[in-house]
Amino acid sequence: MKSFSRKKKTVKKVLAVASGGGHWVQLLRLQDAFQACDCAYLSVDKEYAHAVAPSRFYYVPDANRDTKLKLLFSSLKILLIVLWERPNVVISTGAAHGYLAIRFAKMIGAKTMFIDSIANAEKLSLSGELATSHADLMLTQWPELSNGHNIQYRGSVL
Amino acid sequence: MIFVTVGTQLPFDRLIQAVDEWAGDQRETNVFAQTGAGTYQPSHISSSEFLGVSDFNSRVENADLLISHAGMGSIITAMENSKPIVLIPRLAKFGEHRNDHQLATVSKFRKLSNVFVAENETELPNVIKQALASQVSYVQDELASRRALISSISSFIGAPEPIPAAQLRRTV
Image 1 (tube, rainbow over the protein chains, first blue to last red):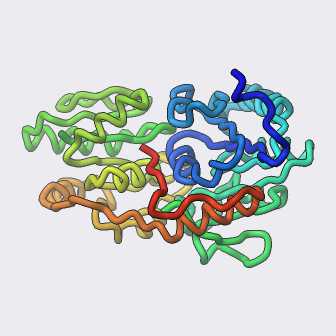
Image 2 (image 1 turned 90 degrees about the horizontal axis):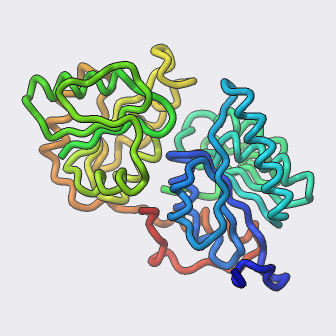
Image 3 (image 1 turned 45 degrees about the horizontal axis):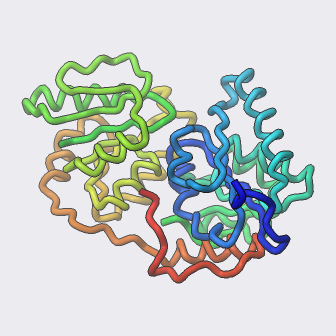
C-alpha cells in the first residue's frame, strides 16, 4: 500500500514492543505519543493487530527464560524485524521481547527507551534491570524507584 | 454475570477453585472463567482456557463483576470499563508467579474505588459480597501522570507534542 511507503525524512520511524496482557495494555495507553510518527508494533498475539490497525504489526511468539529454543527463535525474528524496519526509535513496555529489541536496535544506532511495567511497584522487573544498562532512557512508573540517574520517573500509564 | 480471568501467561488454580467452590455454595450459575492451562477442573462454573480479544472484551463489557489475579491488564481493563474488580495476588511460594510483585500491586491499587482485594482464597466470599454490593458507576481515569509520560515519550522521539489530555484515547 502506498501509505506504507517511506515517508519524508522528518517523520520518525518508531518500533513499539510489548509482551502480552498488561504489557500490551500499557503500551496502548501510550499510543498517543506515536501519532505523529510512522509507528510499527511488535507483540505476542496475532489478534492484537486489530487494536493498532492500520499500523504495521509484527507477531513474535511469547517466550521466556524457561523455553530456550522458543526464545532463540523469537530473538532471531525480533532481530530480522529490527533490521527490516530500521526504526529511529525503539520503545518498549516490557518484557523479554522489549529487552531484545533494544539490544538489537542499539546495533543499528536507534534510540531506545524501556518503560518498566507499572506492576513493578517495589523493584524493577528482571527485564527492566537487564535493559537499564542498554536503553538510552530507562523509566520506572513509580517515583520511589527512580535513582535520578539511569532510572527515571516521568509519569505513568495510570 | 461474573467474569473471572487469570490473565494471558500462567494458570492460577487457587483462584479458579475458590471461585468454583463459592459458586457451588451460593448456587451462583452465571459465572464464566478464563482459566489458563491449569489442572483444576471447575464443576460449578463454565470456563475456557483462553479467549480471543473480542470475546474477552465483550465478556468484560457484559460483566457485573470481574474477579482476577492482580495483573495490570485486568486492573486497567476494569478501570477503563468502570467495573468493580476483585483481585487475589499470585504468590511465588505456590509457584503461581516468579516473585511476589502482585502483593506490591494490590497494596498500590487497592485505593482505587473499583478495586477489592482478597489477600487469599478464604477472604474471597466476603470480598465478592462487598464488591457486588458496591455501586461502581464511573472510575476516574487519572490523566495527569499519563499525559506527562506521553509527552516525555514524544520529546524523546523528537516528534511534535501530542494532542491535549482531554482527548487521550482509551485502549478498549
